[in-house]
Image (cartoon, rainbow, N blue to C red; front, side, top):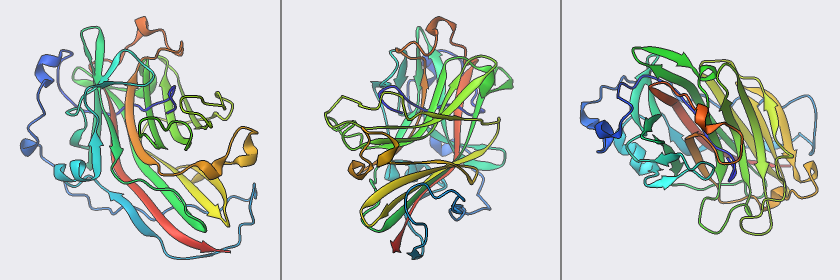
Length: 317
């Protein structure tokens, strides 16, 4: 979600398009939550047939959890995540993040974190969360990152798909978000969605630069892919093999491609480190991607997250 990249949408949330109903944190004690019957699945990372960079054969250890989140309680949200409050999105002067947008709800029988966006005067209130824990693959270590996400808009008493909205920009990504760092320690976008009122675009991307605020890659490493409406698992396998680093991107367990330092002359994957995991739902932009006068997210735009997982394992070549 570069300083020109972010996250999107999901479902069910009955409130009006004025902030007066949402100026205080929601009474989370009164939210009914269903218990998940399913556990977070094991990483689905069957190696692709194409060997892009490094030799695939490796002796690997068992997976262990860095982040294992199925959003079982509201206290876990604040224990494990920072709910951004009082800040505009990097890429939009219309989208203002408030801490009461992310909350727990149920959708399709699943207990979820929901990021909601709604219109507030001439701007939009929305949600952004980042993990408290940071991670990256040390030497001879694999990191797997995944989340199950659904984007859905509320339209009065009914619902609209993500493709029906215009101007929504959801994202699932990793970056070191500390001030004065971006993009010197890299950014990995597993999912960025852009809605255009009848169509949508999804993409993966990488950003990197040697000086703060100066991305050397422009948008050269953006790779688009198709996503249908509904639940999807977005994931990556981030590997360090004897000091050489690469990153494989997956959609629903299907391999989409790989990045490594040779992907671009200006890319140094070995500098990517200390990343937070971020989920956010941006509305509008200041780069000309959308016509901000045409934004339409109906009553609310929502990004539902069923689970998030970050796991590590040793790999000894």
